[in-house]
Image 1 (cartoon, rainbow, N blue to C red):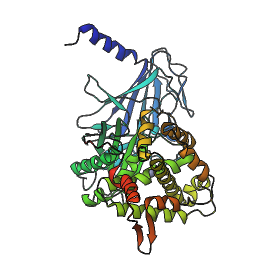
Image 2 (cartoon, rainbow, N blue to C red):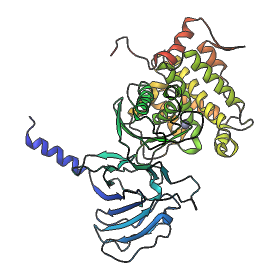
Image 3 (tube, rainbow, N blue to C red):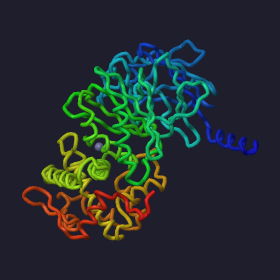
Image 4 (cartoon, rainbow, N blue to C red):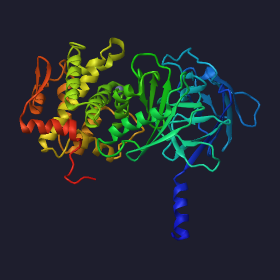
Length: 478
Ligand SMILES: [Zn+2]
């Protein structure tokens, strides 16, 4: 038994880290039409509160300082001049219908069957900056039978109501909170806790099957270096998407903590979900911290490369199939955005539909790096071990990284110059990377009917190390 003093010491140490904690309480009505928020500030209130969405002021009703009858009108942000030390504010947000007036970045309020999906930017009025010793606690008061899914870190609470800490990622990074009659499922994988919420749909999605699908995809990512790259994440599965694929639309957001949102066609058979690349792609994004949108080729490159590599390793497709898919992708990349540099193709991606170039050139650069790293270190290092080392070195996750910074960091953790060399060679080039040397090293030839493998032992070992074995391991099994 631990001595009492030691226990007390641990408790104090734990609360000492709580520093200045602003406390929000968010209540939702049973109809899921109004959020009523009480925000109390620790010490002096921040000068202003901001919400990320341009439409947040339209959804806001009745903002006032607790104890005062005078409503405060927002003008962009909300001034808290009249809030006393340790004071509170009260406000309500109408979430009964979508608002699309100024904000062009998509609906901030979705009613999904009987459930409600909100972007926090429409309702979460918060300080724009938190100092190193500040954090925000958000507690939810929910009607009987209503659950909440939030991206933030859950904290234990005696009330039985869900309580989270938001952390200090930028206030305008997107995040979503869902309310509804779902039951959140915890998926434990590679040391992480993924909190899955499957929202309402007609027909209802099979929650057990969705859980198995996410578990399987997350396991493929965790197998890259033996653990999932984040300690926790919110996973939202939203039924009702149109399209012939099982998951026609999905993305990762980072506000508060990482989250992956999957908009699914729940009518597709579960086998198609397991065969689909989307979930492995999205969860592979979590291998890197948030990358600047100017450098989206890097985050998409990692996800695109590993969506194939990891599915081959987990037996979802054959190595040959994975090489074929990579090659077909590189060909699509070569055929896209002629005359543009990668940087230009990235900049014009949404306008000019240059996705193929951006995604596949990113993937090609990572394949080149993976092969060179394995060759140079006789298989001791790989892109897998480099990403594991990057994750280990406690990279900051509450700011955006540039590709240059991340490539420099990857050089540092691998003790090589491979990444910056590849960066210098390709980012400003108008040509898609020449893969001839890489293919030669892998013993890959492009024949009339697709990819052909050489029978050379050395080539086969390199190919297998990428598509079969994963990270180099010792001979012992554990
Ligand atoms: Zn992606």
